[in-house]
Length: 322
Ligand code: NAP
Image 1: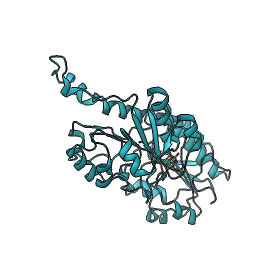
Image 2: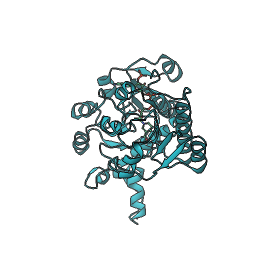
Image 3: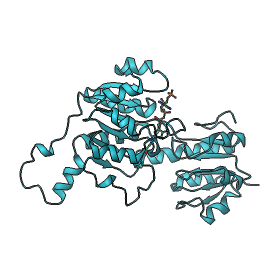
Image 4: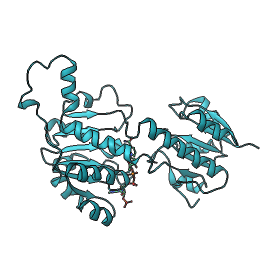
């Protein structure tokens, strides 16, 4: 019997052709809700899943009795119940490394745009309101030479810090579950206790994964510890931040400004005040969203599912011991 792969994110023709060589593909690239009847129907027959952004719950897994492997087109795997997948001997794969540099570019884009008020001031030009040289009230703050505090110092955190240290002469502090001596040597980075980092950094940048430990890692207490001039950047996951507390803190002016690629609810609800706050730069979760990187991520997901369903070790498994 030919195994079936349910693909619920867009792939290009070549990627689909690689899957179709040995497998039957149910291609539903536009599915946005797990309740979609076509998705549920295909799930009951699927041996493999390729997709992203849909929470795959144990209840959904109950409807997928043949499932052997999932290839997520993402590095973060907070949408998957990893222990439950392992218990059911379902292999989960993700796409690390290929998106690191692009996501770090997005992190630095947010640092620069927020510090220099690029979106707010570009809006002024666009609306035809630039009538004289800008005054002090429109000045931004420098990024070069400042202290960058990385919360999470893995692949993406290190790549952002590298840009800061080598390109902008920044001092690097980090808070991470384990020490990173090689990065300390490479970048002169110094490890700090979380609270100390919040108090010392000019720019606090979050790149931890979303886990039970990191959910709402940032709330009213953490924002109150920051400098009044601090800039807060989140390219990790929205739920790492208590967004209500962030909005309140930004209204009080501590931190001074925020650059956000991710939100507690995505797409961001239309009644959220965040996009209307002049001290916020809000992006629609574009961390890895370039042509090159999204292609590389999908290529890796295809390689993962092909290996997994052919009984080989995939390039990037998450729960490898299953
Ligand atoms: P990674 O290499 O695994 O780095 C994560 C780092 O966070 C690791 O160094 C880890 O420590 C540390 N960490 C984990 N839990 C922690 C905690 N409770 N306190 C302090 N540090 C903790 O992952 P990555 O490739 O850099 O990706 C990081 C996250 O970025 C992903 O999980 C994803 O959610 C997010 N992301 C977002 C976008 C976007 O579009 N905005 C794109 C890609 C990724 P250890 O080294 O000790 O394990």
